Image (cartoon, rainbow, N blue to C red):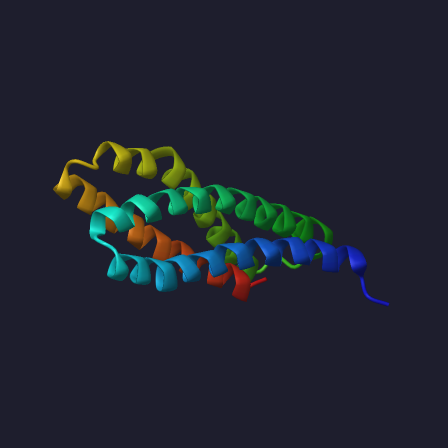
Length: 146
């Protein structure tokens, strides 16, 4: 008979990662290129910016599911198996939490303030792209070591 408690907890963890990874891939690899190709940059940005803002809010839910799932898995089944892989997973999860807090707390408001300043906005936009890609890599690492 399956361990339904473990399966449920692991499902929460995997669901959070699926939301994070799937959303990042869809928005970054599919939606953004198509949107910026089809519309003038200003219009595409006016549509895509609020979409990223909503996705950041969804990632708060996703990282909460990831943290809860990983914590319960660790306390219930992995506490006596402290390995480097579990530590790597927790570093990846910590990076995901930092990423979403930094984006919501600093980066998105700074980008709103810098809308008229092309150089400042461009610098913040590049930072946002690097963080999105880094967080995607961290989510994949967390998935690998789940």
